[in-house]
Image (cartoon, rainbow, N blue to C red):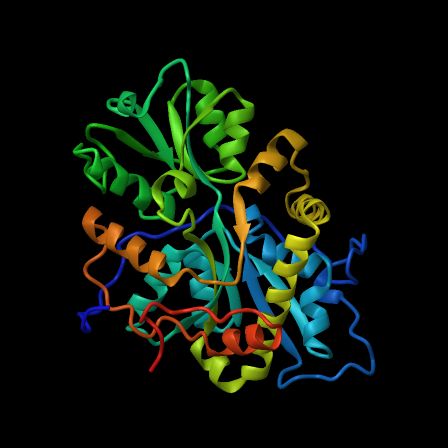
Length: 369
């Protein structure tokens, strides 16, 4: 990593939509439908340094570590007598705001909001303490209008929001083709249409967009409506076929004052990812059950299965790919050159991984001193 550079901010960062929380925290594999905020903690369970830890995440498959960890009670088990209190958010900025205000302590969130939150506070409000998921992003198109990647020129392609992770990736890909697009307006050789994931399927069906560069399960929803995959970001663009799509962040104040709680949440996350890997079908059903509680509707099999298969759940934050994504935003004109040194503190995670017999992970030179 190069020497420190001036700290600046992203002009626009967002994430995907969410709805109110109605999940449960109970035993492994449980079918309990209660609210996890009301989950009963065993009377003899040892309490950590706080009575309650407040976590945040989105009701989205790329946040399945949190969905499943809460749904199956894996996180609560590691916290013992400290109660877990989950909340969901409409977008990355609102979750960052909640972290800054102290409304939550720990959150699952995408790379762009993490970068934005860190740079806006001059590196003082958060740390990334773990990875959670990779992949789960596709470019899908109307096959009647787009036959190949070169056919995208002149077409209308949706991304979730100006400056969000998928928007930045698409703008970078467009630039690599030698095409020109104004990042702010989305106008140019390709029309980049910023569209909320909730309405993108209707926009596709109405013909107002010709395709979309979007995360799961939105991509698979479009495929169910007749779209075809033109590009899989992980498979087609990243050398190791992995890039960070979800991090775990924590308030620096909370990390300093309650390291035992952070470590317990990370143990729960690591064990949840291990459970997901060992029980993929059961984990997929658990995540879908959690989504049903959040949105009132489970994902049908034809959407759930391909969406789930395109996501990799892992503990490695893939730090070098976060730095690459930051540089994409710089090239697009959405971010001035940032100094991300100190955005990671992976010591608690590596302690947990060592205890679990797993290899330690690297911060790509972006960790605390």
